[in-house]
Length: 112
Length: 113
Image 1 (cartoon, rainbow over the protein chains, first blue to last red):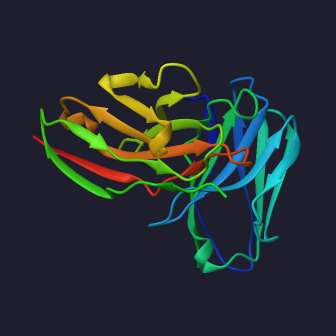
Image 2: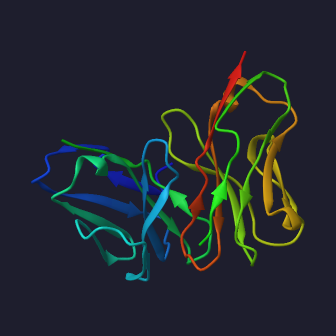
C-alpha cells in the first residue's frame, strides 16, 4: 500500500529542536488530516485541510504548526516540544471531506 | 462533541470462535461509521463502513457490522475467527460537527491457534 506515505518513520528529538514531519498522498484526494495516537488514548484529530485550506484545528498547541502547500503534500512542523508529545503521528487523506479516509504508516516521535 | 466507546479493550479467542466487538457513539444526528484494523507492524486499514442504506454492512475478510440507530451502536462481528485476525480494531465515527474521525480507544484482539 503506497497511497499515503510518511517520512520519517521514526524521529527522536530534543525539546529545543525544530523538525518537520512529511506526508504525501498519491490518490488524487482533496482532503488531508493529521492525527495523534498516544499510548492508552484514542486517536485524536489534530488538523484538517481541504483543498489546501485549514478547516479544523482541534485546539492543538501552537508548538505544532501544519502546512499544506498543495493537495498532495502535508507537513507538520514541530518546535519546542514536550516529552508528553511523544506519540505516533498519522496522516490520512480522503477524496473530499466526509469521505473514507486512508491512512499512512505514521511517524513514531520520541521527545527527550 | 462526539465520543466513541469500545467496551472491550482486550479480547482473547480461540480459532473458529465467533467474534463481536462493541462500539457505541454519542451523537444523535447523521453519522458515518467505520471500523479500521491495524495488523501488527502495519498501518490502519479500512475494514468496513456505513454511510446510509442497509444497516448490515459487509467488509473485507468476512467481517460485518450492524448499525442500530436506536442503540447508537455499530458492533463488529465475524462468525469464525482465524489466527490472522489478531490485530487492533478501531471504531470511528464522522459527524456531530467534526470533519475528521472520532475514534474509540481500540480493541486488541488475540486469536490463539
